[in-house]
Image (cartoon, rainbow, N blue to C red; front, top):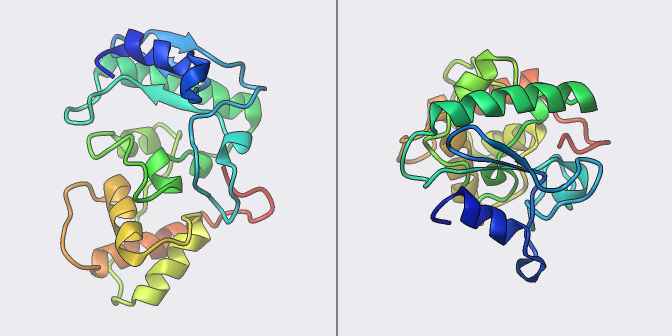
Length: 198
């Protein structure tokens, strides 16, 4: 969408069958579109922690960004405040904060490579891996990613999704750094398969 107002119009139009609980403008303005105790339609097809219907198990936050530039500082400050309140209100641990690209690799790419996940992790609002490099093993990589919560998708889509979040700009085949990231996430933040982790 060209701006936040256009996004809000789209998210509030029942003909488009898409919505979110919150929308944050570039200037930091918070717009509540759907009460948090109601289901929104932000996620669509995908899964996390072995469970589908992410819409019914999550709170959707949409961000005003063109996908090609860094996220504006007022937006990030507003997001940090909102996330802190949501995590407290709903007793959500930081490792259950995910992006659309995490739960629907290949279908969704947001929030994209310019989103500062590391900043959220430093604020205790998400997680960041500390893993060392590990021997390349594609089956182990997929198993570790699944243990963290990633869905069962084609290996190339999984690699893109993990790099989009934890190694933006990385390219080439699966490597030792990717292996270390997945292993560390699986070890420190294994998803609870009972609640799906979302």
